[in-house]
Length: 392
Image (cartoon, rainbow, N blue to C red; front, side):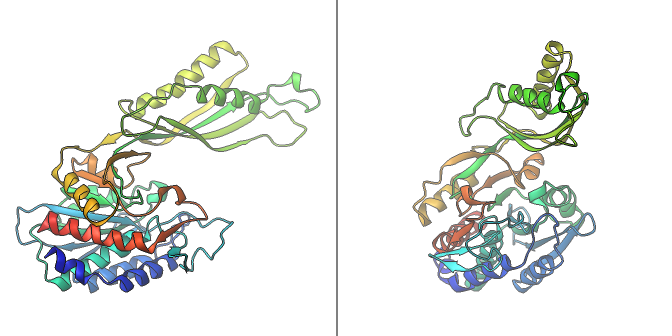
């Protein structure tokens, strides 16, 4: 059966579908799904799936298809991809929405992150149907919203509420086809997004000694934050800190009385998100003790996730690694990543997961984003083999 399914994979169908989906503009923000969600619904229905639009909030239509298996006790496999992409940005050598084929690759925003995943999954299901495959367990195909903004009504809503409302099973295994060059990501950093406002004292810019510059104080605070100890994990690089935004001051000739910055802190286990927030607070408290002119008027967090790690002994992981080795020149090695993405919500419900797929993660969110056609086709072969072995 596996050979039969492989023979039914249509390379031209896969390439064209990937191009068609890239050409549907879904930058987030503004997160407009009015064109792509109906298209995904029609695509899944055309594949013979039972399709539900799971919309927890107006304008957030996740599309999920179910291929019910023959065994009520059989496992449920979710193959997942998100429909939104980051804004295109500037500096492209090609039109980021044209899905142009050049140098053996499809170029454009979402080519690797991750319209290719939606096209691969659809192509695999099409081949499975043509080959006469009958799944023992259930196959779920999800196209979700708002991954790029960590929204509450994308995969989170599907896993925690949408499937239950539809009367559908939660996945025993969740395969998220994010670009990893087929590393099998199973451990993930936690993250907190923190907002800090430092309060200063305004004065004339020509007499800065009469005031307290909130920007200067923020500079010292960020220096101390970057000096925090960086912890490591066997599968991941050390903790990271990024200043995402910074804003302060009104005019060049006024000592700024306020400065606000936001921070993206990624950290490895066993640190929890609450402990990570406490690390920031400890640095602030220490600076307040040593500098009487330093004052924080606002400290808040607006996103937090604990580090997560799936069950490394899950049989499906070995199965996936074997498929990668059989259909590519990749080693199929277990690895870690800076974010669990959509798999985070499945792990919170006790499901086993893997984040693994074709594409170079170093070029996503850049103006060099592309997916080599070789990797695209290879990806379909790996996913097809995995579905047959998992559900056959």
